[in-house]
Structures are given as C-alpha cells and as structure tokens.
Length: 188
Image 1: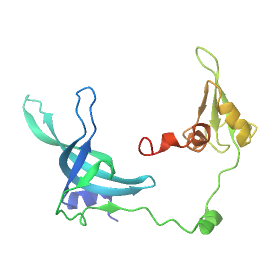
Image 2: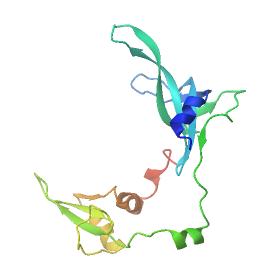
Image 3: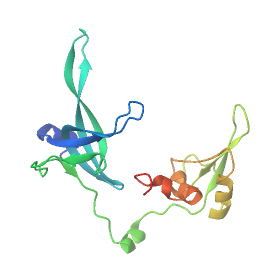
Image 4: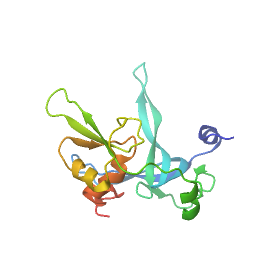
C-alpha cells in the first residue's frame, strides 16, 4: 500500500497560485504568490490542497536560507491554476463513493437518539452544563435522556456548552443559531 508520504516523495510538485489573505492592519488586499502543489485531498467539505509556500528560515550560524512552508488550503477559495500547467500527475486522494442512502441506512451504525446532560463544577462562578450524546464516552452513566426540544431549551442557557467529542456541537449548533455561521464563506 502506498502512503501519502511515499506518494509525496515520488511526485514532483506542480506550480499553483495561492491567494494570501488581505491584511487590514497593513492596508493590503489579497495577494497571489506562486507556490508548489504537493497533493490534493477531497474532504466532506470540499477540496484541500497541500501547498508549499516560499519562505526563509534562520540557521544556527545566523545566516538565512530559502525554505518552504507547507500548509493545507481550501480549493478553489485559496488557489488558482497556473496557465498551461497539467495537474494530472499531482497525488490526489478522493473520498470513497457514498453508498445509496437506503443501503447506508441499513448498514450504518446509528447512535442512540436523545441527549444527556453533565453537570460541571466550576472553580469560580456558577456550575456549568455540558450536552452529550447518550453514547459519548464523556457522558455521565445513567443520566436521563432528553428529547430535542428540552435539550435545545437547556443549550440556550448561559454556562451550557455542547460536546464536540460526540458531535453534539455539530448537530445542535445549526438548530440553535441557524446555518449561516457554518458556511465556507461569509454571506453564503
């Protein structure tokens, strides 16, 4: 089996334009820099590209040498192709095909329905509450299971947070605050 690090060692990077963010403190708008595209990875949220940005590094003797800073960026928001470059040779990891929803529902393990609360004592100030899925490893054993409406009422209270380990935050935040805050770009 070929691992991503093996693939990167064998592949030659391709040039790609990376869009750098605007900096209001410096008064600069977005800028583009040509970087090296090492790998592409499809995720559930879209595509991520591993790019190597040109940089410098300091050596122990006080000298400076050219270096590369590798970082994952979102495509197409942060990258643009370089005209005339073929990207077919760039190592690409694709998501496995998603099975038909009826098949997925039949074979997929389901988490128990409902939500449980964990009381958390604070060193200072009032105690807090954490909302968990019933099967979360952080959930208190034997806690009563609440339905969706009751847990949303509790989640709106001050000093309540949603567990990110079991997915409570992922599942309940859109119901509490709407979907606008989780889009990839502002105003989408």
